[in-house]
Length: 107
Image (cartoon, rainbow, N blue to C red; front, side):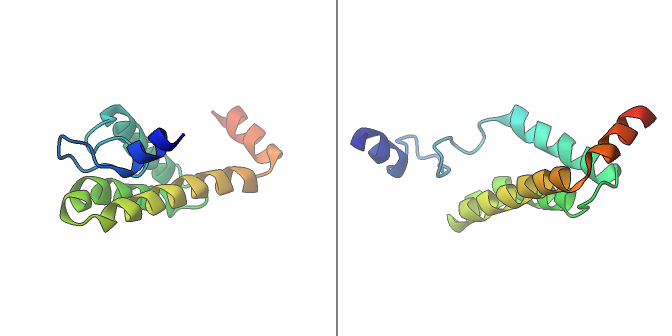
């Protein structure tokens, strides 16, 4: 257990900036493209809450640009991602089951 905690705290030897959860900046490009597409689709669909799409766009900018400028940008990007995904979940739980059935029938 202690070895795992030390691995999370110590930076990698390659000199790359690490995220608090262990992966390096630049890893997971497919997930980043997926988040971008998800945020565009959510914004264009005009589903409540509308602020989630722009928050995820800001997350992408802070994740790639800000992480090279300041170590605090990593924590800010984590908070932005949490807020964006939390907003998606809150919007999903706020809609009633009837609303989902109407959206599926309309498609």
